[in-house]
Each structure stands twice: as C-alpha cells, then as structure tokens.
Length: 157
Image (cartoon, rainbow, N blue to C red; front, side, top):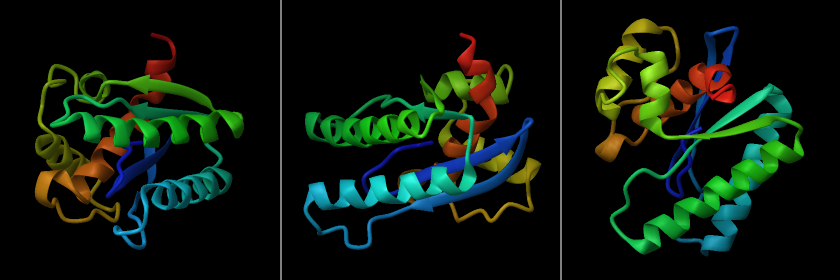
C-alpha cells in the first residue's frame, strides 16, 4: 500500500498475480486531519476485512519536502500498520525502490511513472486511473500493487 493523506493506493495479489487495485481519497480534503485519518482507518479496515490478505506491505516515506509532510504521512503509515496487525496480517515496511527491484529486476530505481507504465502494460485489464500530478491516481495504484506483488519476498528479508 502507498499511504497518503490526499490519495492512497492499494493492490491485492494472489500467488504473484494481481487481483485488484484501489485508491482512497478523503471525502472532504478540508476536514480536520484527525477526521481524515479516522476515515482512512475505517476504509482500510473494511478493505482488509473484505480482501483478507495474508501480508500487507506498507511503503515507507522516501523523501519529504517538509517536516509537516513527513509527520502527516507517518500517521497514515502507522494507522495502516496497526489495522493490518490487528486484522492478523503479516506487516512489512519497505522502501518503494526495494519493492520495485523485486517486481522489475534490474530496474529498482525506475520512477513512479515508469513503474506505472510497465504495470499498466503488463496488466491492462486492471481498472487503472490516469497518471496525475505527482503520480496521483494511477501512480499510487501502481505503487500499491508493486508492494503487493513484492510482499512475499519482503517478508523474508
């Protein structure tokens, strides 16, 4: 999963094959931070209840423009990890480059947009969103799916 306060991306893979991709966005981005976090947590809990994954791979914050962004994103990472653990999932944190190097051998340093294009070409039947500004939409779905595809390998590291 690619956590985010404005948009988060999730993917489900079974036996190395993608099954589903989803995104979450707050109903009202102007709601207080605690309300958006609560909404995210409820949505993610329902997603895990419905999808019943064994492993949840959560992308770690890579680089941040500010302390505020780091603080906000870390809250979403923490809520996701807590809910996944509470649901009995194995939880693994990973750097996006680590997951990409597993899914795209030799191309772990590819950009979010390059990963999106490769996954969209490899799995054209998934309901991909457009690749928006900063990777919003399809890029977040791609990062979520990359984590899901890499999850079994990430457990053993």
